[in-house]
Amino acid sequence: MIQEIENLEKIEEAVAKSSWWQKIKDFLHFNVDITDKISISVSDVLIIIAAFIVTKIILRIVLRLITQKLPNEEKAKFGVVFGYFRWLVYLIIFLITLNALHFDVTAIFAASAALMIGIGLALQTLFQDIISGIFILLDQTVHVGDIIELEGKIGRVEEIKLRTTRAVTIDNKVLIIPNHLYLENSLYNWTQNGTSTRESVAVGVAYGSDVQLVKKLLIEAATNHPAVIPYPEPTVRFENFGDSSLDFKVVFTIEDSFNAPTPKSDIRFEIDRLFREHNVSIPFPQRDINIIQKPNQSVKLSLNDSILPVKTEEKK
Image 1: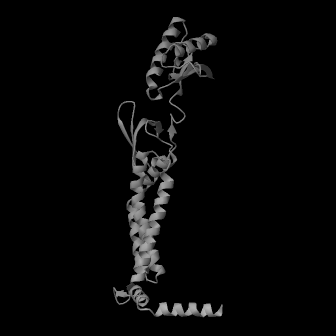
Image 2: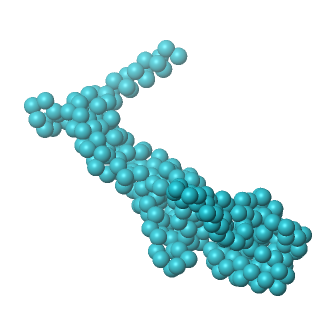
């Protein structure tokens, strides 16, 4: 056993002293002086190349894991952004590797930090838009064809880009939405749960009206419209006892919520026709004006809200 160990040691010594092994070692330790203080060897270059190769493999795995559930079109868009991110990672790995190889990269880090801060401040909104675009692609909260409402604006999504989202309003106007608005505001997605939505039309009737008849007429007006689907059935809500009217709201479901203003307008026309046919009054705010004048005194006006016709009294 001892003899075998001694034989192995002799073999190792022989390999170490061999000319080809020594040549490899000399080649790996061959230095190139870039400046008086910076010198780089072949082994340092190989280590840097190995770091880049490992980083590239890891980035490919990460990209595949992130985009595996995305559509092909969205994968292409995300790949463009990830390409810029990849170069940033390569730069960071390069600097870290140089630092591990005992190169003084303090000045480089300081210059890079100052440069990145300047670029970040100048392109802050652009970065917000791009990051928001990445979030939209990843969490799939908005898709092409969805009807969204943002800051009171309603549109059908036609295209989702990295910086902006393109939508078309009901008036066929193009709406360009910066993606950072998704992070700063509440987004209403009308069609995420399906294309059908619940819509409503509000109306007030005069006090003393037959509320059951009003309910029947409102349901009839909504049910007879071809755009209203039968299920769920239209319903009527008694909203409030208003200042000059009894307030009702008829609620119904339609398939094409993007064109909801058209059937809602048609239903209002039908409600007006049915109310006229059944003598149901739709009141409007009116005023009583009383003019009181006494001898040697100025005129005093008093206004009172009511639903009575305007009348004038004069006292002397």
